[in-house]
Amino acid sequence: MITINKKIAERLFEQAKEGLPNEVCGYLAGKDGEVHEHYELENIDKSPEHFSMNPKEQFRAVKDAREKGYEILSCYHSHPETPARPSEEDIKLAYDSKIIYLIISLAGQNQEMKAFEIKDKNVKEIEVVIK
Image 1: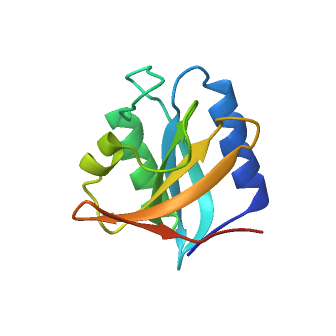
Image 2: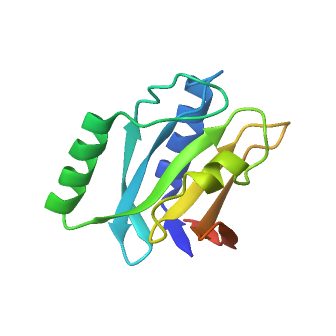
């Protein structure tokens, strides 16, 4: 389970919309499965189908989170036109089995946010609590 503050969750949807037509990405940081901080990172691929995070921004985010006593809980990205489920590429590139992969979908009329554990190419949906 991952718990996300309502304001942060709303901002993730806003970021996803602002980034259209491309995917957006970033990190969620906190403690004990509860998100306290989010980091919006540049998608250097500038693509609607995949993302690569800006390495300098990644480093700064991880450093800032550690300084605040947090850990990176989740890597997130958006799917502008597809459902909130990991694509084959998402699964292939999920190198860190310790974090949660969060996907924000803007497909169709219902925007949604879902989270997943991805270990050895096995995908398990994780509950997202927004409070």
